[in-house]
Image (tube, rainbow, N blue to C red; front, side, top):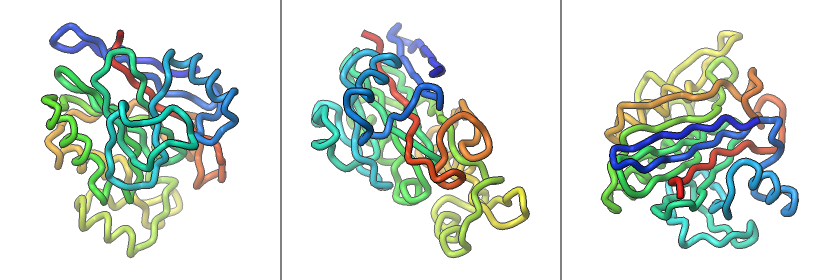
Length: 229
């Protein structure tokens, strides 16, 4: 079942996080609506604000997002300052990120290599700063590990140019790989956030979530967060 976290902030407010697991079922935005709604309610009450993820750096306020998949705008980050409003992203190798702040609004983001290279972390941190919040910690859900993520040399050079040489890794078979954990850490540090926690393991060789690359799975796991009402 989903793993849940409660983080108490300096002002006494609480941020609630939930990372779904395979046993919780499919949270793809286009999953059968009635079943999806039921699964969401089991994880966290309320109407989830979700976006149609496009591997970019656009961030939207939950107040501007419609509830249905058909109307979901394209973006990769969601912000809210409304207590009780769940905000969510999905993944199946790309990383779901929760942005923990000192006070006020919080955010979640979907970060694949293209989104990291495009600046999704900077965009979310900036969106929160515009609303008067400072990010103190970023919690990262399940993401593909370098041992399972063979990567083309040209694309690897692109990510390394943007985020540094630490993103270069090696697969379990000895071929060049992208180290997403290192890439995420570099992006977070570059955005001014040093406290980065990887709360879950590899999507491809573990059982923490779905994997498009390893198993061509169409399903998605989810990260959902809210300021406790």
